[in-house]
Image 1: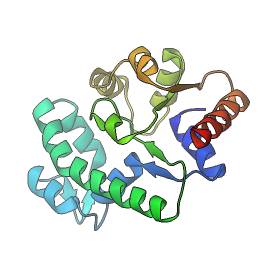
Image 2: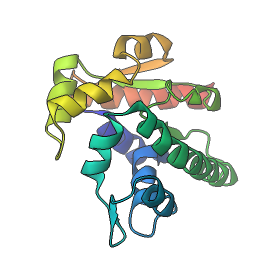
Image 3: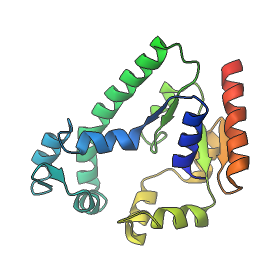
Image 4: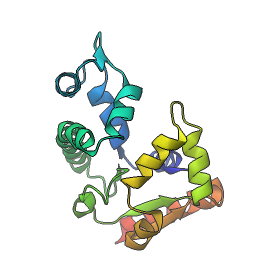
Length: 185
């Protein structure tokens, strides 16, 4: 079980989940709110209203300046979408919600959370899972890891760690326990 599967389990257990990656894809997808700014900032990468995501990834992960430029476009829009999600959850009187934010620590978004749950897999398993994704290469994976906080530091800073290398049943039980703990506190 990885982060995506853990988010699915939270949803199955009735916990609303805000998915930052999915929001980013929607914002940069056809007719997405970020697409015009991305087309302007990265000429030639939006063709007939469609972003060439592979070309963009290759560009931004090889240039910290280009990556910051993309983040300056996307992060404010994602933050706005997250605030809208939270507002809706508050109106529904939800006691617990999950923010699925891959760069939670790196973007200093922990101040928006009452508790932090980290899904952690052994390095070999994380590598195996990520490299199985379409379009992912060892080089791109290395550049993605380079901009992330190391897993052991995330675990140290987390309130709860869900080990994802010990099987789905174990991880699911830890997720259920974390929900109970959060609701009762």
